[in-house]
Length: 160
Image (cartoon, rainbow, N blue to C red):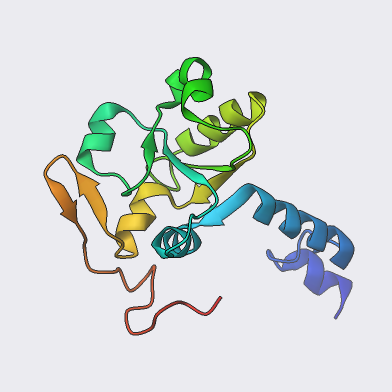
């Protein structure tokens, strides 16, 4: 491959990282994030999932819909209430609305600053619903059909 091809190709304009650097980056990413399907699988297992799931949104958002089994702890209340609600020996997974919202990130930061082990659930509540998982509203439990652009519709999982 010529140098010219690398500099004019928008994908390769900046060269990929060296494999050891890439491996470190992606390993770190997995230490900080969980995806919706993995969280759903862990919550669906008969055993304790080993983490507490935190919905960091407002009460109005929580009432509109939330993941069954999640603990409602709005980000602004974390400093005052985390110690009463959470055990520092149990990891926490945060979520907010979706990929366009950084509320789950802010909640994860607040918890990490207080000494909690924390991950953020990528996709948030939006992708939970779009992948067809059950959710709760103030009216009860419901689910929507999986969006074929976000989840396999004819398989148990995506295979990734």
